[in-house]
Length: 342
Image (cartoon, rainbow, N blue to C red):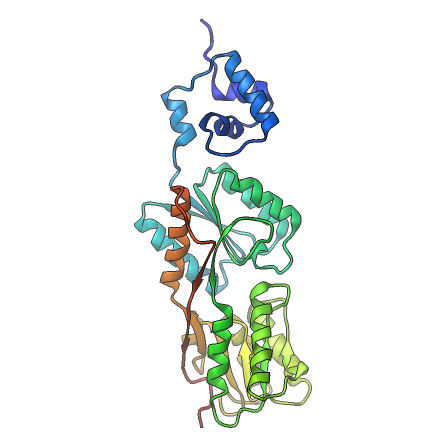
């Protein structure tokens, strides 16, 4: 009995992947012209017509959305991803979560793994999309994935057409600066943590410096301390460095709540008090902000809206609908008792 030709046989004879044959058959995604010609020649040779099951495999959805994040242990990422999961579940989708731990080789490997799982869309939160300088090889990898799978990011990837859902970072810093500079006796403001390798940090720091100038306060380089770590250790190291000069700022802005924990420890170890001696504010307004003593004044975001926008954007792209190039999430200042008000 003569064996029936399958899509796998077509791919093998043409020397291409099964997904390439699928793209040629559906005609929905652009294929390299030479590859398309070779595949079409094999299809014509056997007068190949995919059966109903094969057509289903070519066109079916997995109802899986892949999320690649930098580190789920960071409260910002975990809070946002929980919101994404809730929004996805309400729409009949499941999430497949991967952690890269900010390792580039790991990111490449996990992108391949998500692709192999046939996810309907990929969401990248943290990692490469956060970096100021987009890695050319990484951008090429994403562009290859975009031929078959929508990719949504928080951040930016130059050289790609990824849709973006981002926080309005300028507005976030403006909210903090307007608040702390409205307090009595504020003459010096420090910024602790974060790295200029990352887009959000560049935006925040530039706004911080501009608003100091606008309000007539001096920018003190010794009070602007970066750190590659976005956790308690990074915050402690950054604050130790600020205080090592023997000068005490009136306010310290922490790059995130996690970093603020280390800043509070460092201040305590230097026999200083919050907010009596130093006021502390931070970004993200995660659960940490309410757990520490004193509770942190922090700029947060409507995480439910944030997650909903990410997932709804992904599903619209899956359904081949139009979406904006970039969507912004509005920040909100939550005032607690880590700032001296009198």
